Amino acid sequence: MGVFSKIFGGNKTSQAEDADYIETILKHSEDAPLGVSDQNVIYAGYNELGGYYYLQTYVIGRLNTKTKTGATLLVDGEGYNLSLKSDMDEIESDPVDIFKGNATRIDFEIEKDTVEKIKRSTIKSITLNIKKNTFVFKPIPKIKEENEQ
Image (cartoon, rainbow, N blue to C red; front, side, top):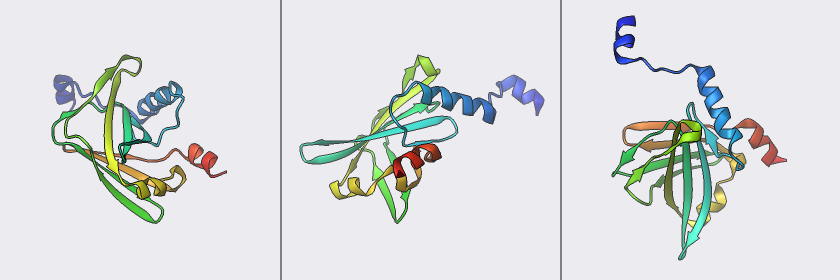
């Protein structure tokens, strides 16, 4: 196995390196993230335009993608499960030099009553499916506790 990693550059990162990377992203942000995965942080906000509601997400981290097939977002919460499809099929990551990573904006169309359901304190996990990749985000316990008080 050692020969293959030398030839192909086996660039697996350790959990400690991933944790440091996530910590760096969190330190540079003033906003509270919706969740974190091994190498990415997801931020979200709502917007209304012409009577349509959107969940605007930004994934900051190692995700580097360019697709014309869109994405899906699965939100698993306490008492609800949501499946949202991206508003646009074309999605592309932009480089962010500060983090040596990327920022990927993805908007999801959402119903007004669904907006009311999603609260940080009730989210168990968020799964982003893009291309053939799956990213599972978990809420940060510290932030979840602060919002419940």
